[in-house]
Amino acid sequence: MRLNRRQTLAAALAAGAAAGLPAMLRAQAAAPSPSAAPAFLTPFGHASLMLTLGGQKILVDPVGGADRYASAETPAAVLVTHEHGDHFDPEVLAAVVTEGVALIVNPAVAEKLPEALRSRATVMANGDTGEVAGMPIEAVPAYNLTPERTQYHPKGRDNGYVLTTPDHGRIYIAGDTEATPEFRAQKDIAVAFVPMNLPYTMEVDQAVEGVAEMAPKVVIPYHHRGNDPAEFAEKLRATGAATAVAIVDWYPETDDPKGPSS
Ligand SMILES: [Zn+2]
Image 1 (cartoon, rainbow, N blue to C red):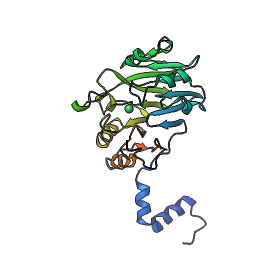
Image 2: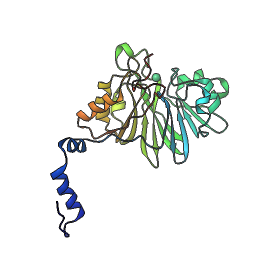
Image 3: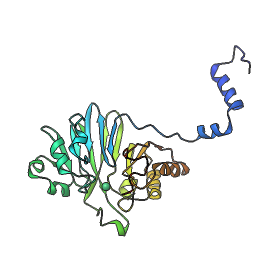
Image 4: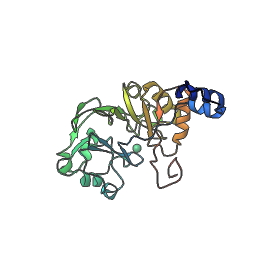
């Protein structure tokens, strides 16, 4: 194609695209592309993560041995969603919750804390609001809806958290939950961390449905041992949802995106 000097670059590109792009490439361009993991996220595995917000670190559900967090900077705050071993580890908390670090827990975890930590913890029950590291925080109920699963996370006990951040909008860490009415009703979420594994949380299809209704800008599958997050991304895209999916490697110890088979 010869360019007329008066053609703008944009027009030339558009003409070239219409004429020359293979059909497969055009199809790819039309689908929402997967999002890169946000730079503020440090994944430590499964459901343990750190957010760097406004220069401050917020550590969530740190487990797996204190060594894992030794190289991380001292956090401003540590959030614990609930008492299960893949979210709550008193030994790790004793190591990372040093002088001046805020600790936010649900009431059931507060009762399980060693005295030295319990006296310093801020307890948030479902629906409570507060402030952490200068940011508004809300405790969102996290629970199972399916009768055979309510033994794992009974309603009223465990938390998810929504942080309203100055630079990155509202970040929702859902915790161990199904797509409850409270989950679906979250508004203006920029980034949602959403679990998907059975029998503890929900299957991929329920996560797809719930996320399509919540409509966050970006969703990050986590706590998905046993499920491939790419399957979730594909099914969410098929609903026509505008939400981008960021796939993060939560299980680096294995090549399997579903995590270790245990
Ligand atoms: Zn869990």
